[in-house]
Figure: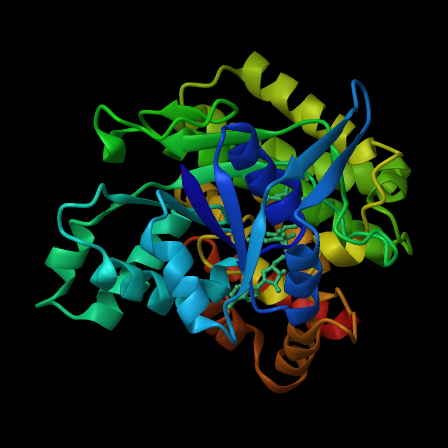
Length: 383
Ligand SMILES: NC(=O)c1ccc[n+]([C@@H]2O[C@H](COP(=O)([O-])OP(=O)(O)OC[C@H]3O[C@@H](n4cnc5c(N)ncnc54)[C@H](O)[C@@H]3O)[C@@H](O)[C@H]2O)c1
Ligand SMILES: O=P(O)(O)OC[C@@H](O)[C@@H](O)[C@H](O)[C@H](O)CO
């Protein structure tokens, strides 16, 4: 069995590549980072170092690497007999992966077993986003023929993999916790065998619980922590002011998760407790800059703040904790982060109403609109 994984970065090596390797797949990493690919190609192995309770080292060996920016022929050869394609490149990069997978499906015989395609990104239904990019490239005439040669399954991935030390080489430091939930129904009776993943009939509860608890809480910790002058996530959460603000936002998203899905209040409380303990892990060198990265993406309509806040407002439920986190996100002033710079420019040159409509995707008259406009105005006067 063979898997081609796009994105040999932190979660690619520290989670997806590891779980596929452990499931018996021959893993081929595809990436546009030439130095990283050269290093992977020169060594067929790396070590995943877990930190925290029950930590152990895990070796990923027998892997190969291909530069997807410069070696189209090599990538096509690897994709030709792949069973699985996965991605961990960031949701905004999926459009650049789409042409490669379209070409792979064009070259794939109609009788070959279908290619399992699973995007492992922090976004609702990321695989559908990739499939839609592919369908648009292919066109209405050809697409049904290509689509029949693949199975597209959405997934939810959870493991904190921080930015790695400059001298770490290919090795990756990760937390011990991990969860990979994959939609079962697209595969019919023959889901791929990935022992450490679990297949679920309905992914929505898992991806929403993950994105609106882990990622809402994580990003809130980063943005409130940044404003309080902290560098590390664990230090930020040790600050009672930050912790209180994060708890308020998570109290609101938890109310939504319980109202929408079959998780009990006790289950959601336990889940929340566990994730805050994960953020507190002092052995995990995670930073507010990494976790807060790309604040514009994180303030998108279906993302970790606006997504749950919009649904809560539609239900007449409180959203003050989330609005405070949104103001903090807009005040994340990190010159090295292009999206932070872009938001700073938007706050100086565009009015709050325009930002709410165009950046956050909230329509005029939506019940969240007035609160959001106030949150944006507060950030504009503070930044
Ligand atoms: N790090 C985590 O804790 C974590 C956990 C769960 C999910 N995720 C998600 O996984 C994705 C990747 O995150 P990460 O932390 O590993 O980021 P990362 O920056 O460490 O890795 C991304 C990799 O994608 C590569 N890449 C960029 N453009 C590419 C292209 N066109 N083709 C092929 N490769 C390309 C980059 O060179 C890089 O190696 C994101 O969607 C993120 O939200 C991350
Ligand atoms: O990857 P992002 O930028 O969407 O979010 C940053 C972190 O919250 C994220 O990478 C978490 O570490 C991860 O989602 C944990 O499963």
